[in-house]
Length: 253
Image (tube, rainbow, N blue to C red; front, side, top):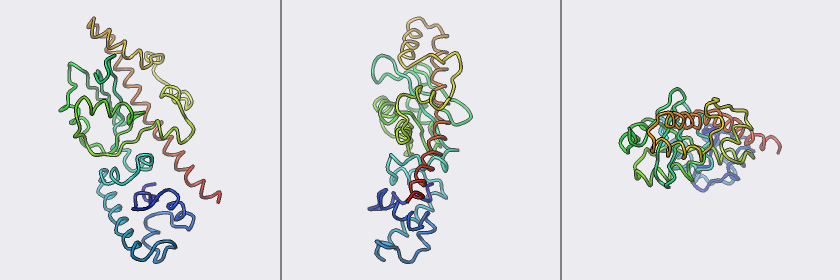
């Protein structure tokens, strides 16, 4: 889907991009092979050719920062297929005090890394845990997780694209919280955390913090793990359906 995208070009929007698709220019290669494109002067054609060649280079080099800079945030879903093998699914838990992070969970598609307040959660370890990833995937992370992390630990995290599944789901008419969308998509959770919600996560931390009984922390970590592991099938679903929806709109013309 990246190579079919033109919205990162200067003065291009979805309407102009769709116009190219309707004229049979479906990818970067088609664009470069076309000598004359209606509505684009020869000067701008040469300029866009250079931008597209730069895009090809960035894709070959897996330069996620390039696409983070030029792709609109609402279209980050287009990057998922190419960068999913280097994606990290992230979710945080907080205490009743805003900005007090208790758990950061990171899932790379195979294993989970958990950073816990008072044990291993600090700026250095978080930056180390994020190193090497090309795409961060969250649910509502642009409104909550990322701002809270930046408030707590400051900026300076890897410059990589951020796919917020809350907004990707909304494009498909799937609205509501993560648990609601999981049910719609028939994505199950393990029984031990099936009934736990966000407010319970705060309670689990407060109980652990006051009693030091490890089963509270264990349940909190299990809950956080479910949150991040279940982001992967949702991301797969959103990418597949949004791509289909994008090109179906062309076929109907």
